[in-house]
Length: 277
Image 1: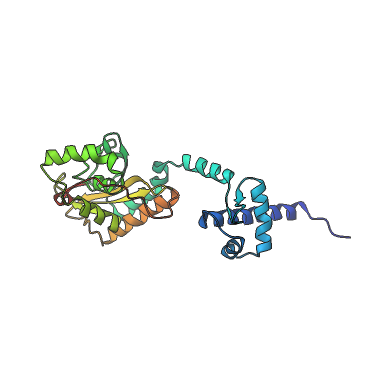
Image 2: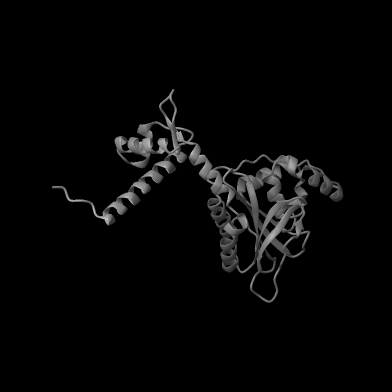
C-alpha cells in the first residue's frame, strides 16, 4: 500500500509548485509579448510537458493566455492587474532612501533626489555630507532647468511639452539661443549622467544621473554636490561610477529593465553646460 504524504511533504510540494509557476510567469514577461511552448521550455530549462501543465493552470487562473491563431503564450489579464497594482505602490522616495544614504556614506558629499514638479526640478530628499562645511540644498528648492545639472538631466529625458515653457523663459533671461541644445542633451543621454562646475553656485561641482520607472520614463534625478576643492565631478571618475550604480539600483527597484524613452526635444545652448547643481 502506498505511503500517504505527510503534511510537511505536501507543504513543500506546494511551495515548489508555486516557485515553478512564478518562474514561468517571469519567463513569459521576459519573452513578451508572446512565445512558443518550445522556446518557453528552453528558457526556463524544463521539459515542455511540465511547462504545458503549468501553463494550463495559469491560463485557468487568468495569469496567462494562448493565442488561438499562433498557439503562442503570453501574460493574461490577471498578471496585468497584479503588475499595475505593484507599480501603483512604488514610491521613488522610499525606494531611493537607502541607496541615497549609502551613496552619501561612500562619497561623504551631499546627495539629493529631485522630482519634476509644477515649477520644475524640485528637491524632495537630501542626505548632507558629514563634516563641518557642507553644500546643502533645501528640501522644496526648485532648481533651474538650464543652469543646473539636475535640470539638464530632466531636460534630456522629459518630453518637450513638459519643459518648453520653462526653457523658453530661462533662455530669454539668460539671453541665450537653442542652437546647441540637441548636441548637449544627446550627450547627456549617451553618457547617462551630467557634470557641471557651477555658475549658479560658484566653487561647487555637481554630478547628476537619471532614475527611471518601469515604463522607461524618468522618475527622478539623483545628484551629488560638493566644493570644487575636494569634490571632483569627473564623468569618468569613481564618484560618477558610484552615482551611476546608485541610480541604476533605484531604477531596477522601480521595475526598470530596458532603454529609457527619451522623448525630450527641449532646447538649451552649449554655454549652459557650465552650470551648477
